[in-house]
Length: 241
Image (cartoon, rainbow, N blue to C red; front, side, top):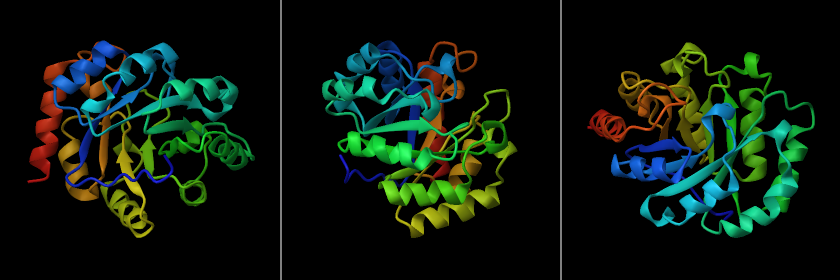
């Protein structure tokens, strides 16, 4: 799906889910985009293939869906070769770039060659000193080279700090403009809290606002809550008014 483009106005609410039950709850709460991952396995922990296949059956109910595949250093490309054939409607995948070493762009390019039907979101870790991940300029250059439709800014460590502990609203506005000039979509994550979302949406105008912990009953590893998803959707809609 190499021509897949992500441009939304107003911003869409992306909710990360770990099961079909959570996916249905997220949709009931008004989620626009589903992202499938296993929160206990890290920032971009990969869900099981069986979970992806279950969620695939309801994927016509929302704007799009994506899957986290873990960190590049953990990725076994061969295991996804057959798997992607069973997920023909998967829009996009995310791969983390922590501790990725000097040849990460070549590895991602090989992944794209092996799976040209899958769009690759480019991930930038705002806490890149913790993640030992590539710089913003390197990330953007790779996004252009690999035909990525969107750049996601996230945090690697989930330790109570949020995106705004590492990047200011003013900096996000500058990054938004840079991506707009390059015709790249803009997604923001990083343990965002409900009270931060209006300021971020109004200042940075992301295409996607991505949440996990804020949509759960008690932290990112707990059960997803329909009413919390609905609240986040209302907050996002009101921020755009």
